[in-house]
Image (cartoon, rainbow, N blue to C red):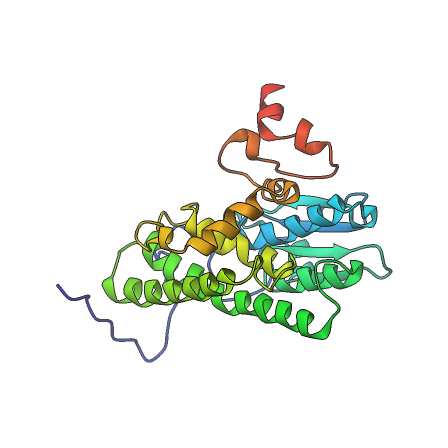
Length: 290
């Protein structure tokens, strides 16, 4: 049976009852829906986020910088619940007019600098602290090639494949086939690159790995969309090797916990304000003390 066809009207109109899980927060206009200031902690960096693949990029980099002993990279991480519309508060929109997580304020300078879009945050912090971004022109460019590859490719994975395979109220063959083909092509791109390189951009672990791992590592380990079997993820052996290697890094283990509000309670750290929070303030500890 073929998919039903759709004839677009001359002028599109918004139907907020679209039926997918994000329909209550999707809208065709920008700007705040309510007045609410963002909380501010004591550290130089204020991160407002959620542990989605995009949010995890930033927290992994912060934790990697702290793992190196760079105390100037201390940060407060505040939970932004996108299903509740926290990203549409006036305070959040002032930091990111696009109302997407993650968003960050660098308060180590006056006036504070706002940084939004995950790739921009990675590049900003890597340049500020001189870590995880090579200075050699060729290696730096290769790292940025792959950083921006992720920025351009992931929307096909998330907004394309993920939406039609996992979130759309009805499944249709054409969009699922279209985006499955593209995601498998992307996985093949990564697998070929990682066949000859330990890390994405070569021999060095960089912000390119931090950008790509939360999306494609989660995909091949069946942690998003439950599509690993459908996509034959087991065939991308180099991606799996790289995924498992990064997952063992202590900073990656911590970074993926920050601003997480689902899954095992011991893996959830809703807010992060101190290194001791990973031991003392995970959700199993907080709920167990109530």
